[in-house]
Length: 202
Image (tube, rainbow, N blue to C red):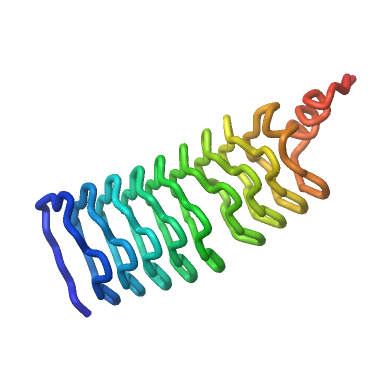
């Protein structure tokens, strides 16, 4: 297994179509780099940063990421199946038509992330920060979002049927925009849901 450790910043490097599978990267930093159609399967990163990088059609299947930041990156039709993100920041990144399942996020920050139409059914996403995330038309049926922060999230057309939302933070707009049939919620959310739909509680 190839291990690379570098504190230097790589800027605007071209990694398109590059075979990088199975490598181990520690403390590597990338800005504006192009990973289009790169083979990153099984890649392991620790403490790395990727800023405004392009992962269009990249294969990140079975990759593992710990304390890594992928900020304002683009994942267009990327493969993320069997990947794991632990303690990572994906703030402002965009995911479009990606292959997800199964995928695991643990203690990650997905603030301002775009997950429009993402197919994440039955995924475990407890405790995630999804503030102001774009989840429009996402398939979130039976997803575990216990304790997640969805404040300001755009949920128009999002399907949260059967989702576990106990302890999650949702604002009034989210409670109106999403489909929540059969979702599990705590009492506070149930009261907020009723109020958001014009009901008077008490």
